[in-house]
Image (cartoon, rainbow, N blue to C red):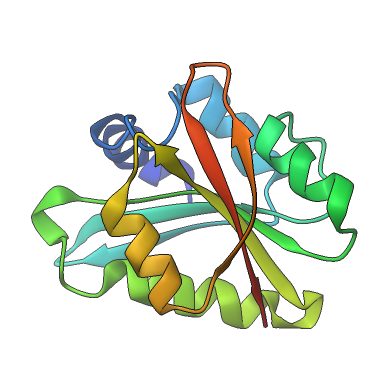
Length: 153
């Protein structure tokens, strides 16, 4: 992910903010500087999706990251992923997960979370099909509940 991708990344985040959390230009710049990996997937010359991933010991201030970090010291944490609505069902999420899981393999596990109340049914099914298992639940400040997921790599 480069600075040139920022506008597209922010637009994609806003389109999926119901499943993520808000992100502005300053927050994206901070995320990129602290991330283990910030990547985009291009399709037809456009940013079709993105992901932001953190490693252990990151100064990232997230209750979800902190929850996982308290339980594991060797991991990679997938904080957010979004795919452009016009490119859904074309394998972008699968390609991003394949890349992140492959890069994370030396750490032994990839951690993430998905809203379970209200349920993000598509995402929960996607993660289950990829071998992610539920390792807990966490109530969010906004009243939503997340299911905490782990995949041993």
